[in-house]
Image (cartoon, rainbow, N blue to C red):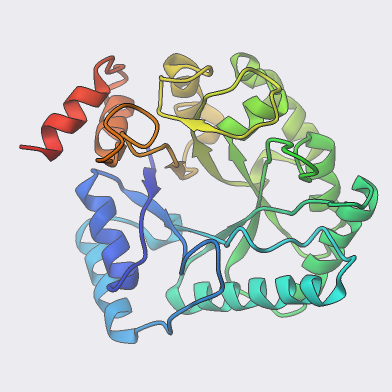
Length: 300
């Protein structure tokens, strides 16, 4: 099983990301090449990159399974302000180039929000943007993320995602997000039915990554609020069936769950839950006292 989590990309860049992932018992990870809310990016340090690649080999992590995530500020769907749309295209192109330098195979992208446009216009804008970006042959592949449908988000339905994949001239993939699927209205207890529909409309071969998150919301809430594994409305057993699904073998699974303390008690201190959530998943056993175990570990 290829499973990891979201990690930081700090002063040691990819090397630091890899070290953090290994500390959680992960065999893959996802990172941003800078803060997801802004465009500030430091040049890639070639020496740190070489060290990172050696570290990944030593810890048996295949860099082909490592995922990068594009910043949230990119919106390919809205073209009302041409300069902002052009900026999104240029910045996403820059991120793809950075991924190529790092040797990363997949870049997850939120397709964008319509904001004052019809969904049809917004979807076509996304396709047009992707076609412009992919005129250059990047090694890194774009994965469009399934969205919860918050506000005017695009790609919150199978039909919208299928439109994007089919109308982009060069191949793009899909990143499934369990919280987003649930919040968009997909009943994950019937996940086999969804996979069959996905295969018919898009093709399972297009799935390049899966974000594993529980949800704080009821089905079809369109809110997008992640919960820790087994502590939300999707539930541990349902998520476990998705993670271990026979048709999804070999696809990287990435946790994006909240730090403990951020959404639970003791808000002055927050702790990463990933070591314990990954252990739960590997052991297939739910920890109903996750908070106390995490606090005890990080305060020992």
